[in-house]
Image (cartoon, rainbow, N blue to C red):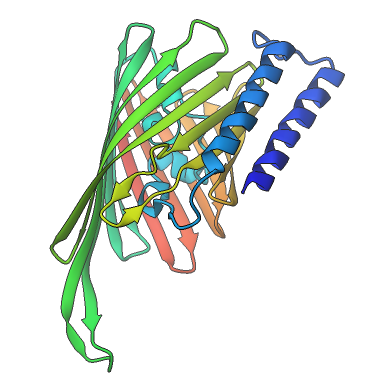
Length: 308
């Protein structure tokens, strides 16, 4: 994983150098500040990946959360500009200037239901974020060693998040932190745990860079220990109404793009883990509606989200 991260940071340097060579400024960030930030990415990437080989990744929180983010293939770490930032990069909360709420419900591969809600409220030089995720799988068939059906059981994952994003006062840099209360339930057995994420986001006129470290405390839920994991992303803004993004997370890359036809209407497309995603968004006054569709060998998924 560290090797992939080194390649990722190296790619960021090459992109920056290319932009400078083309005499495109990095706006308020400045080349010196950008180099410091990229060095920061490398250092915390190394710390985040120095984890015990016996620990595992938290697949539940790795799953796509937020409909717009899903439509962009979850390449959202450097986009992070709505209340769903709490799930991907809490530093993005620091850039939100007004209270907002998003909530969604969706069918996952025709086998499970997933709901989420996120709320952001600006406070001081940043914003407080609250998040909820609920994943339920019901009527899972239980069989014995001979394959005889012995009934069924259910499985569920729930997460409650509280975070804060801060605009540091440096125009181009925001920082974030999230505390998580996690609950896993299987056939009546319940396990609980607490986790912490930290994140940062750099924003310029032409490029955003985001990085988030999940479970820096190696969250323990029962006998399961969740490793520290890094999520790094980059978003390029080649035109005012276009965003092209990519994320690196848990050994894989995801890709996304968004085009705003007019201020009220946008379209998204993405690719992650052999899955093609697409969606659209509509804003009418203070109401926002997002819809996302994903196609996978395991089945199709459709999710809808409404916000205020």
